Length: 132
Image: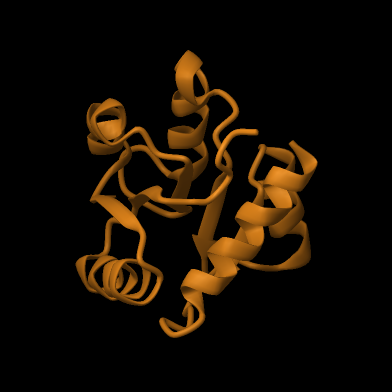
């Protein structure tokens, strides 16, 4: 049976302050190997180096937004089924349903709690593994 524990995460977030807090939360508290990118284009350039098991994306970013970035990632055969999580302030129920319909495994509202972020990510990962 393959190891289903989550180790490597690719995070795409354009705001440096949010990226820094999330990095601390996921690396120091969660113990994950995190690759943080400031744009969808940067993530596409980095994805093969970090080989993420899970992708965390901001929704609203300049250039390629989160949904466009996820669509581009899904075109890469190695990452077509990699679970993805949107992290966004846009969490009205119709917006959340839209993200899930686009293939997100979950949605984490912003602002997030740095102390519980790693646990939220683990819960979404465990659900995605149980389904997949």
